[in-house]
Figure (cartoon, rainbow, N blue to C red):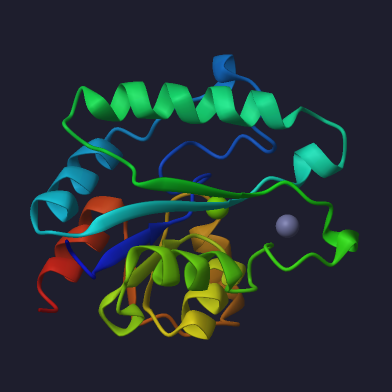
Length: 179
Ligand SMILES: [Mg+2]
Ligand SMILES: [Zn+2]
């Protein structure tokens, strides 16, 4: 079993971030995502999605709707031979001050404990500062992608990822060169 994994933000990295995607009809998977995930998986990386879905806590959509979206992602990714090991969802409102909302690293630490991961050999890919901070807090290396909110995040200059990638394919290929 692999002790290496790539943690993936969802919106803006795997899917178009259309601001609170709460229904399967609004899911648009980025064309590069299945290809990139397949390369990482073939190289022995487990794949975990870590996503803040405060739309649940805000009452915009239900936790069940989130699960339907992830079922759809599983179906689409399966056609590319990709299996997501697990989805870690924070459904809380930011004001709940929960432990599972990025940038807090709890989901990554939980995954490491459950799956026996070596976080120093893991990576976090995201488009927002909270993704990069989350990965850094957990002890992973981090990649900022310029899809989604990535350009804005880069311009703000608040975080220092290990690498800035135009998209998830470029991110995956950089990760595969780090071994
Ligand atoms: Mg995002
Ligand atoms: Zn939470």
